[in-house]
Length: 426
Image 1: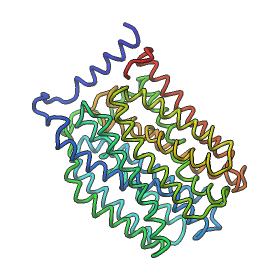
Image 2: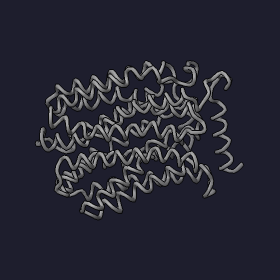
Image 3: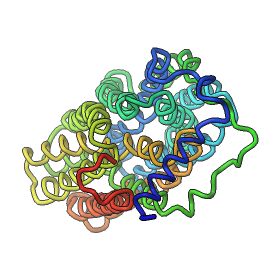
Image 4: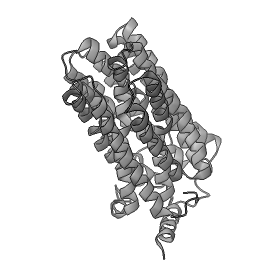
């Protein structure tokens, strides 16, 4: 049996073990109920990941207005801990999804993350914001994130990549309007009330819609908490490192492009907010479009292509130029293509390993996102301070582009293992 045939058989075996229940007993896929799950997942991701992608606006405000004496690296840790803790706690959240009602988990996530921002509004030092806006928000956001990320693939077969892409597009839409809303609130009513209002929005929207976040399968109580067999599978290892390097390359532009526009290009703070919104806006279209393309030509094929284009946008357009045109083009291309790093990995995982244990499998991949986030923005901020003296972003951009290149290599190797036929749908 050749390697390609083995991969196909293992994938089929994973799909055949979807549930101990007969397929006829399970709720049908691709129905109106399934699209309601996508709607609720969309809102969860809009107000969890969407909030984290706007931290570049907060970073710019903290550095230039509120905490000018604090190092860029330390201030970056607030946003980094926000996403890293979301991914780290996502490991446990994935396990809980298979043992506890996901509707209850989603409700708890809404309450914890909303309260985290409300408490952060009363903090007046970076280390207190690190614990509240960073760690506490990440812990609550992990419950919103994992439920929103793993439920849509369970409810679809024909339109799996499209449905997942639409759900994850919520993070881009959240980042789009929250970037402008956050800047407007900080300007008109102050950072404190901006955080409080955002927290109340999370509780008010994600709380009531939590009742839609229902697993398609019954809770698992007699299986291993985490399927360790995945750790011995070279396909999972490549997917893990693709996610790790992809996370390293994903967050840095969102955090530092707004500051770059002010420091290097001499633009206003509001212009930096617009760049953040451009990246989030193009990612909305990109994530939905990649879902459509992924269903037609293969999710892994699409992931390889989009990661490569993200890398080229950083190294070919952002790195060598210091003018507005190439910079905006880099932001557009990165926003459009980088969504595949997040939106297509759950689909690729489901297609290879099946959907029954998808929450805990994605939970394992959250470890990659955790490490990836920790070694992305804080070291990038330190590189900017030490080698760029706070004004030259060349070393930071190279650091970012190398990780995207490594992620692309891992994606391509996984594609070769699954099939060496160039035009095959994978």
